Length: 181
Image 1 (cartoon, rainbow, N blue to C red):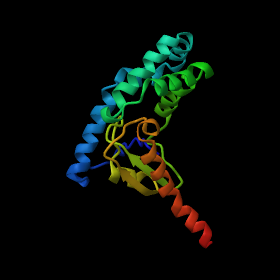
Image 2: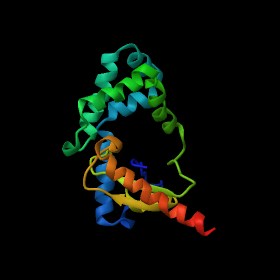
Image 3: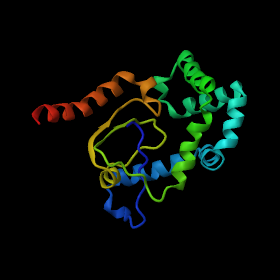
Image 4: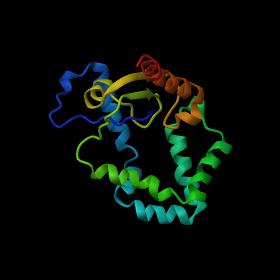
């Protein structure tokens, strides 16, 4: 996974975190509030947004291009062909609504979403909001954590080699466990 939203529990005591994790949590909260209009619209009116984006290829392009500009590492910009390919996948399949609906469904859940299976996380410095390791450890069966020097929210397009190698590293442990069984 290359984006993990870590949210403190209600009974959370920030003094339990290291200075670095407190700073990261503050940055994450600030980063998540910065695109508040984007998050608010998708989490409250995904169907309205769906009609607008499905009706206008220019609207779909503007919506996605803005996110690519804001959430990518300046050193790893996605080229125009890849950006247009990404936009065309949403446009031709009419999936703007289903992608926005994820935000709507997430806001309806009670408390942080929990992953019941072993979890690996690739942390990229230009992602929307950096996860906090100690919170992730408390909320998920975390078995793999890698922090990279480059990359952002669109890791598969920005730093594909790093992401692929990290995914392979994560799954190798399970392949070795299966061979021993």
